[in-house]
Image (spheres, rainbow, N blue to C red):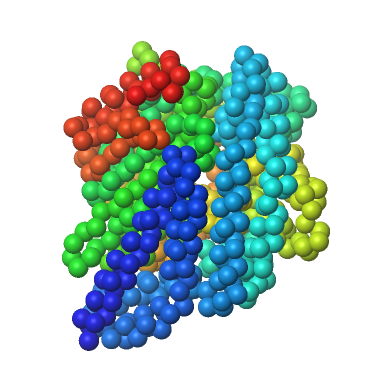
Length: 616
């Protein structure tokens, strides 16, 4: 009888891969701006959603699990049962609403791609604007007019969002969620994504907000005393907090060397990609989706004793000619590279265990990426990797200046993540007739002032996650992940004394966090590695740490690194890596890793000297 169940599992795996791969390939080409086949992508997305929501699957799967005799087979079928229980839409009316919702979001996305936004550059010229460019300008431009234009661009986008179909999508999402038996779409997403009720979620968020309330107001008061009241204005705040430091840091982290820093750092951590194929599209350009992301067209899994390696695509939005873009691009590369490592190391016997949507917890998925990008702020990582053109290491004084600039606003930054959930909860709870453009924008400003003490330098409705149903009402996953990241860091630091180039980290993450995929809950993976359950306290402690304590910790970290023997090169990443710019292949490791890194660095240097259209 097990053979019938095994054959069913194998066929289900194959059917899923086919519908998933088509959707993901079209997702990539559409979001990268290399295809305008919006109709094809919408159809593929609807076909994928229909597959995931097919109510006929569950009774058959339960029957097959009853026939299965081997534990491993039962686990694979159980993974699919959990997957379909999260995604099945049994009510035909709800299924029709989902189709309507997919089409409405696709139409909004297509209109958004046509929207031309502008901001000022350093020469005072009106130039094409993107979300990363505006964020970087707010943090790094010494010209107040440039910063004002960046914030104005965000507000223009906010107004466009509320006037061009987003509020109708909110209405549709609520109708769908209520047809599924939930209070509203926020309730539906929190329960589905994190297996928590909104009340449980806000118990955690409220606790974190309470623990950091004093610190955030103290930070604003200190900034006002040091730099004047104008420093608190949303177009000034990021620059007055860290703008000068960002400019000083820029020569030490050029984006031309970002790929090398990522490869070498991950190698020395012992991270392996298990023969995955990785495609990286790393630079900003017109028509490309304005947010970094990582998707896996082929999930990793074991099929009948044969390893199916992952195919993973990820993107960042660096602009090598813009001050601060090297650092932000490097952060995105480490973040999305962490996601890719996770999705290339899931070792279940079905592809349902290795994907970024429910029953995979967003907080669990983001823990993997955010742990990796957290390493970049460590003093010993900066000392080892941040070097200027003359190969001089970043000076201690600049690391100290980074801490002095950033540590006081650590609580502000993490509360900015929590802010999105408070806003979305109230947005979806509004009476339909009250959800006007003016009322929604007023709600956004109200929550910004309540959580941050000032209006946000990243206005709420300019955050792209709100527009896509997969990431809408899920932003809290980032904050829950940061809590888990601090627990994970504390565990490794207590056990090993250091993080940078620690070769035990990659194998431990693979065994405890990555291998199980969504076969374990987020809390269970934390328990598996650290022996402790989920807690907000470690993150709050880090946020509330004084500058003096953070600098003392950094000094000890650098001193300890000098006493350790050199880390060596580490093992190859075991991945086929392709770096692209749209349809153009920039570099790959088909000949060697060294050739790929040299080709990438040379191309980035040429990119900075020429019009992108002329490069080949």
